[in-house]
Length: 166
Image 1: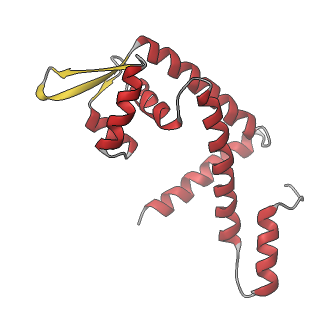
Image 2: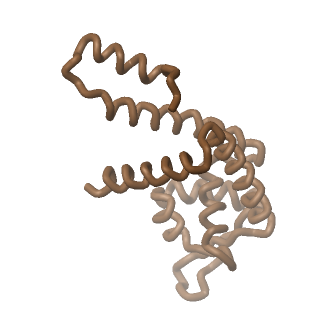
Image 3: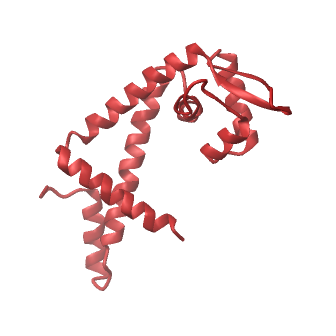
């Protein structure tokens, strides 16, 4: 267990001085989650930028890749998975299609529908990008041993289940 103090400890200490009646445990947990998320988000953004894509574009490519061969989903399926409006999805698809990373085609099962398919170039790019992103995340986790990282993953899963249940 680390004995060094961080910025979140300083904030909690200040609250303890002016409001000793408050339990700031939740503030300490979520303050650190927020700060870690921002720092890692910035690092991931820089990593994906090396591949000429933003995080949102990576998400589209990764969702298609994870769907398995033939790496095809409808725009509606993509929007639902990424919790994105159809307008927001259209902009991402346009940009990725212009780069040749995916293609849109008519859905053979629905005359009104479209299919979005990852191209070979898109698959190669997302495979490289996901590896690079995981390397950045793994490097950050090196501060913990394997058991601690597993415990943290389990605790965060429980916390997330408790915060999204309502």
